[in-house]
Image (cartoon, rainbow, N blue to C red; front, side, top):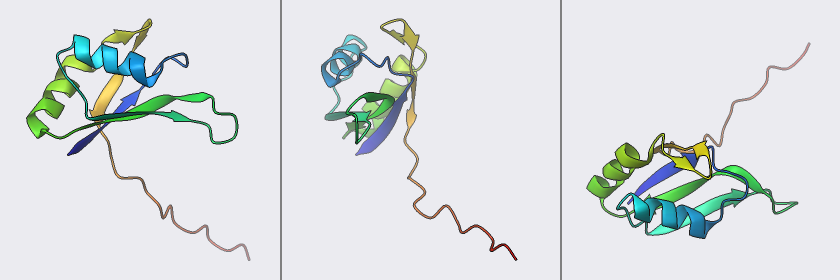
Length: 93
């Protein structure tokens, strides 16, 4: 399973819009998540798409990166693991 980052999403885009966009490119994602602010519920302008087949995921990156959805060129690439330990700040002395 590959997880793809989809950035520069229009704030009005829904999971259904992202599904339709990928389908138009010939790719059917297994899951789609548009990230939302936890307090307001407003979209944050990015999301994630999961695709079981690595070859199909690579095709999705190649065919979708830079293409426009609702007038905005999307950034589509393999998601990087989230850094959960950003490091400690040095103590002030």
